[in-house]
Image (cartoon, rainbow, N blue to C red):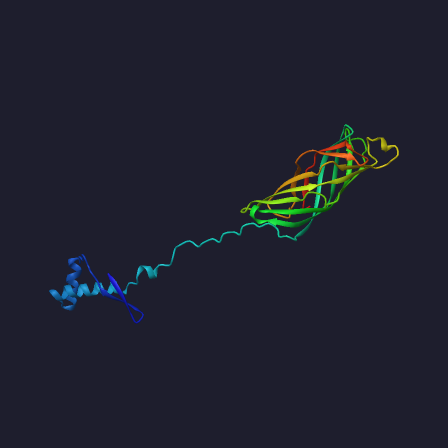
Length: 257
């Protein structure tokens, strides 16, 4: 069957009927009603069939498209831009040895994170931590001995190696951040130290910067856990070659607290 368009109407140009069988009773009834016989009856039947075919709209026009809608692809994650500044709360419980005794402490505070540079080719940001401050209390030995208060403050941030934030997966987004921190830890009225009798604070500083590693699903972090990469030795400022304390574990939650 072929079709042509005339004045906006589909018109049937040609109809080919390969086989048409009418029941004898139906054919006889039609011929008897209208007085049609012989070749006139056959011609009328064909014309009627052609009319029905021409009135039927093309299937392609009548049926709506059933193709599924295309789902828009989610945007790939991006690194924070250079110049972004975030202020993050953080808190953690950590263990350290002090003159051979095991101590535990809980501290909480905040840190500022500044995005300084970006390496798009390696999907990495350079981040500077500033103004790190954490305060809390500590216990030594069995944990029943009254301990002192602890204050952790960041050393000169301009001297520290910078931290790195790396985009490891675009969708769903995944990041890895390595915080590089050097700090001073002050223990007021330490439990196990010769300076306790004089009630002088024990002032220690990191021998090498601490590295805290966190796996994130967004940046800035929202309560994500960072772990100490390696134990951190602390030395007395007056005797920088003598290790006085070592922080063994320092899990810290950052952001969203």
